[in-house]
Image: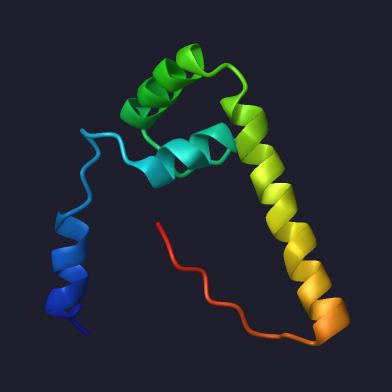
Amino acid sequence: MPESPAVNDARGRIRTDQPHTARIWNYWLGGKDNYPVDQQAGDRIRQLHPGIGDYALADRRFLGRAVRRLVGEYGIRQFLDIGT
């Protein structure tokens, strides 16, 4: 079955020659979904703010704690992650 035009259009808009904030964040977190251009931008930012990787990890840990609390204490079972 051929892919829908929307899928093809989305694929064409991914710019691997320009850094993207979500991929830079992924790089700081040790992820695999980033490109050399994102790594270079992330490293430049890290030169200005050496603790940025630690901040990214702390933010991710906070998110985990917050979600566990909302699930455990309040029974919330669905979350909407808005952002990129």
